[in-house]
Image 1 (cartoon, one colour):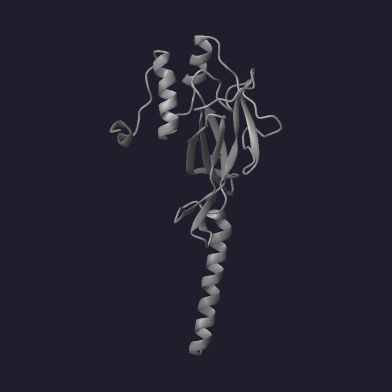
Image 2: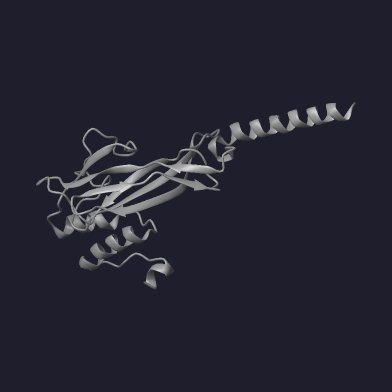
Length: 195
């Protein structure tokens, strides 16, 4: 066998292995060393008065799904957070994260929280009319409605079961509400304690 033929055979074998691994691993072994975090924008308002809610934290958590024999498996990819402005508006920008394990286009799930209001999407009266509560579409202006909570019991029920994502803006808002209700605060990462 000639040297040229050996190189061709080796190239074909390497290509076959790469294609096999790529299709088995879904987007994780994508040849591109980055993932896109989709943008989200919209407005947060009071469900009853329709007035804007300033200072609500909007947390976008991105998860990648990879096909497997047992069905799709989901894993955390990244997250972004921001606060609503005085008009209740927010924008989470589109980002490209380089050299990450989960590549491609992960799906973003939004959590919106403001002390004294029912959190989106977990509170039964929070809404985003015309939108899938679990996976709101990216890059579409959406109006989210949060109900004002009237009793201490409602506020405790709302905050006790909140997921404890370790992101600074989100944790500050959750802990502010927990302190006002006499509940134990969630742990804050070390860099947050130093501020």
